[in-house]
Image: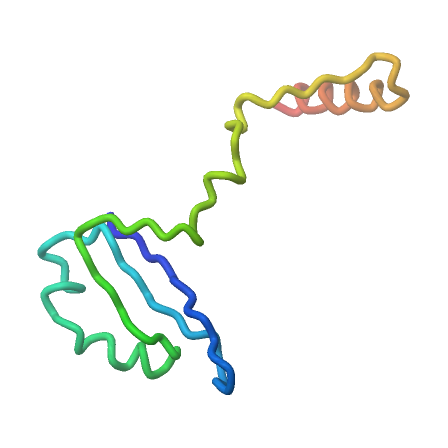
Length: 104
C-alpha cells in the first residue's frame, strides 16, 4: 500500500507564505493512476496548497525527519500497572475493577 509523506523545505529569507514542501508518495503500485496518469493530475493540488513538487515512486523513500521510531521503544503490551497496597487510592482502583467486572 502506498505511503504519503511530507518533506518540509527550508524557508528562504524574504519568502512569504506557507512553509514550502514536497509531497512524496512511495511504495505505489506500478499500475496505479498516480503513476500512469502523469504529473498533470497534480497541477491543481500544487497550486492550491503551495506544494513545490510531487514525487511518486514504487520504491521506498525514508525521510529522517518523519522517523518516529525513537519515540516508542516499548510496545504497549509490555507495560505493567502495579499498585502499592499501602496506597490510599488502592481501594478506589479495586472498586473500579469490581464495577468493571460486574458490568460485563
